[in-house]
Image (cartoon, rainbow, N blue to C red):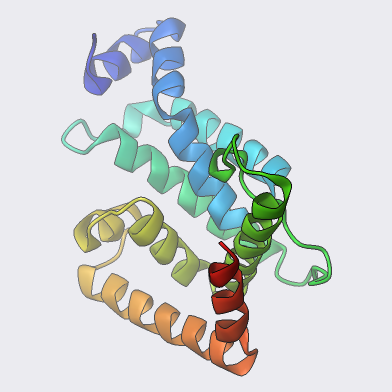
Length: 194
């Protein structure tokens, strides 16, 4: 099995199958990131495709000393941040819950448990949607992808201290949202129903 770096070299020589292998390896990770950032499956699919397209177009700029996955997720997260900024003026109805990501749904869950899980996922996505794009990116990369501060800083082209600050502020903002909207009690009732 070829390494990511070997596949990049082959792709740069015109081997489309090599790049297709990279897409196959990372399409799930890229989609999961774009979904958590954007909150809507169709928009997340478009963003994931755009991230791969941009990666292919700029493959000659890839630094082989870096992880290909980190580089690719960096492209995807920056693209999502740009999309979020552009749609800033569009108001989404809070009455319409976002559907949970298909990968987060258990195939064996019954209808009641599934409804409770849907409500919890919608609650989490709603909280994420209200964060500034830079904070949302840091939270998703840290808590969904379990990346280190250094990796996140590298991906978002900033410093480790800036990432720590963003995560601190994001946690404060989330806590304030939970407190001001009485979401703690709702979350506990959802958790208790599980």
